[in-house]
Image 1 (cartoon, rainbow, N blue to C red):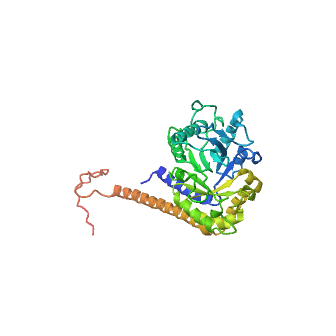
Image 2: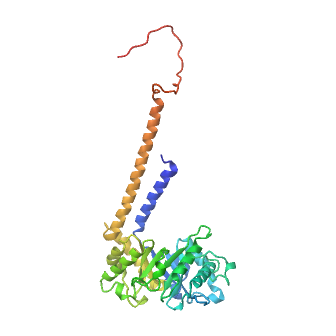
Image 3: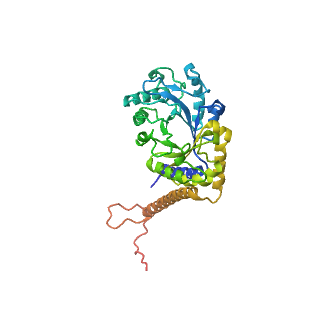
Length: 383
């Protein structure tokens, strides 16, 4: 019989399921920030309430004995130590529930790993300078001050070995004494499957979120109203990464990429109903905050999703909600059954307390208050 804590747990679980159903009215959006000063501050980016994840782009030089270099364009100058002022913005983002990650790589191609031991050294550098390590373990003051980021993102554009070793090394550090903080591992592969740069790393199954870039890749992107090639590649990616949430990576405007842009109306009406049917669909990734700020893409996307889901529902969104309602219904049924069993148990216990002892029982009968003797009398007889 469940006590009050057990019943409260059931109710909280049901409430979380309902919250998940409500969350289907919006999209989890990941965005890249750091390559254009016009995009505004990191604090303002998180303050929009539009994004669940912000990738700081990029740690553009690392590996093979190179001194790592953080490149955040005109936002700050790492060699002078001015990027340490971002610690307050990062804390503001995290307090608002936004995960802030460091993205490695990008298009500059000033990076590669030369060996498993090189991968281990890079992992240690990342840990000591951006994650749970301490300044004492770093060769220099932490570039972002005392900020502790939520994880590392792999945006690797050039084929290279040993990124699987880097993923394993980071995961090993993540599992150490982190004071209860959980760190993430994410990646942004190109949509042709499998990705030449990250195939072996993704095969480790260690990544939490994978935002696949469905742009600048005509063989697998949405083009001229045809979602067939995107659907085929999406099926390959979601099937190959069952332990990760897979995101649909798109440019936030026509200017953000050479090809692959999908306007918000088409995305909601034609593309999302197709990709949402995957059980590990996570949301949408946008390149980048500067383009999104100008185009207003994410604002329109969220608005279109809310308008769509106000209707009776169609496609995968309706199926998702049905699954949520079924879960809530099952939980509600279990709760009512437990309540009924509890009531029956209490009634049964009360009934047994009033029943006479069974013949032959060793339990002495309860004593009744004695009445004064009135002399000899015959027992009463009943029909």
